Amino acid sequence: MNKINWYPGHMKKATDTIREDLKVIDVVIEILDARVPLSSKNPVLDSLLRKHRRIIILNKYDLAGDSGNEKWKGHFKTQGADAFLVNSITGFGIKELERHIMKIKSELDEKNSFNKPMRLMVVGIPNVGKSSFINRMTKKRSTVTGDKPGVTRGKQIIRFPNNVQLMDTPGILWPNFEDELVALRLAFCGCIKDEILDTSTLAVRLIDYLIKDETGAKGIEKRYKLPFVTDDAVSVMDDIARARGFLIRNGEIDYERTGRTILDEFRKGLLGRITLEYPEEFDD
Image 1 (cartoon, one colour):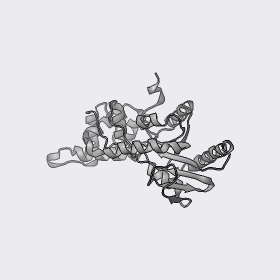
Image 2 (cartoon, helix red, strand yellow):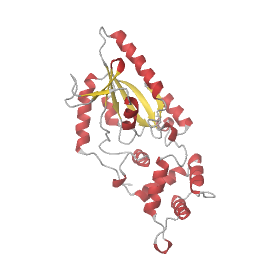
Image 3 (cartoon, one colour):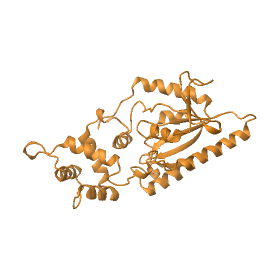
Image 4 (cartoon, one colour):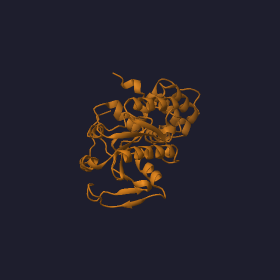
């Protein structure tokens, strides 16, 4: 897989905007994909957020394994950030998060001589579920206002009861992916546009990863009704194609369709709850 370089001009502009807006932000809510928590942390944003109090949202927690979820919660706690397991579609974990936010608000009110608004900023790379998270947080309980003092002109601020305000940001990918494994994991989860990748090759790489994991191997066998999977990813992909009837002329395998199906079903959790990385992999 070639090194991915993908950094549209609007993403640089968005990074500059975030840098400016952080001057008036009290707490940053960082949305991560629970299957790839560290890979879905944008290092560019990471450098901007060092001085800010952070809340980590492990979104799509129900697509990741329970063991992985607990390990990552513990990892982020050692980093000084509280982490919450969330499904932004169903709303799981939102109530607990809201209680935590109000606890922080009370702490800030005690420090301030006047009851100023607590400003939250939501950040995350594309396709980690940031928009659905904000929709869930704001449902029927908020109003949207325009320009506010100290905030970049034209920025939309979502106002909550209890003097809490939330600022959205664009999803930002970093300029390039030096680490191929990070790029692959993000691509598996749909955080990089499929249009810039070869779908069938990516699907083979995903299968190669899954067949080395007990949960992943069993998930493939169950989903595609295979008696067993071999340690050859291309052979497994061929078996999946035949099981689904994804054939073209002369019985040849339609790798493009097969690849799209495998990626789509993995991303929907139809191959099982699978964590693609663990904290211990990144220990020095």
